[in-house]
Image (cartoon, rainbow over all chains, first blue to last red; front, side):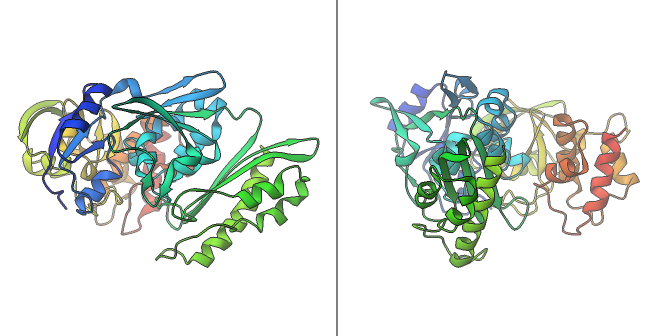
Length: 281
Length: 152
């Protein structure tokens, strides 16, 4: 399968990329290309100009920024998975980056690309949502920050404007909180049929500040508000009951992999397991 | 058309390529290196796996222009002086292939895996080869071959 014809420009800097986005016809950013190229090969996407930001090395890597980690938008899943700072201060995102696709995909795919693509079946959008990450975007008007909770508008639709670039993703350090990400899939390299992420603290035997989010349970990654409310301040043996609320407010798709009802079942079961695993860490 | 320079198996090539040309077709049809196969053509099966700057990637999901300036190794570049690479020899020794179609990609993925994790467990090997499908389902002997190289 061959993509439709397009022009190709290599961006030398973020400013240059922004200029290319402004001046070229029907432009589209490409970094690793592992979401975009498959769509182009199927002719589901036919951009006029590809603006390649894959060589902007200063957007790559993880930096300690005090209470959070600053992850460059072009940081590849493989780099995030093996990064010492990420493993120490936000092990959930390092672990989840290692579950994206397969090793070859992780050698190309980037966190900024994954977020901008906005696929509700992708792992890192869910992880950014559960961590209350902040997405930093640069556009013609300068830089702005977007909370992960307001970033995902709908199916493959995000708050990122067409003339903006994700330069950085800020994820709070998780400190002593436990964490888990459970991804149910039928074959090794599949997307999640359902994924459940949890970050859970505890104090004197009760659960504090539990955060839970889902992959592939609706049009966007979703926070499990009902589960979080049921867990807050609850004793540790309340997990099973709280997990029964997991599918409240979700709208899971039915497709060739699973029915919506099976996804609801998976969400309830995996939520219980994920919260228990987080509490054990 | 764009002009690119790539080093493939130690030889530098300059070429004019169409922007939309996929790297795998540049290697196969442009350079005649047909050891790299096209399988699913959707970045699932891994038979088109090559090394780009030392790391495994699926060449059906890369544009040739994205590889401008890169060092590429294909299956043809593994043997030295007529001697099979240890991974190739291990696949032969342990019968790590049946029809052989997935084999170039399996070997490129396996050598990349061992570079990142020189002493993998069996589980590490199985997960490390997640991006490569063998439709003969000959996985056991493939894993044995990789383990044999890892364990020297």
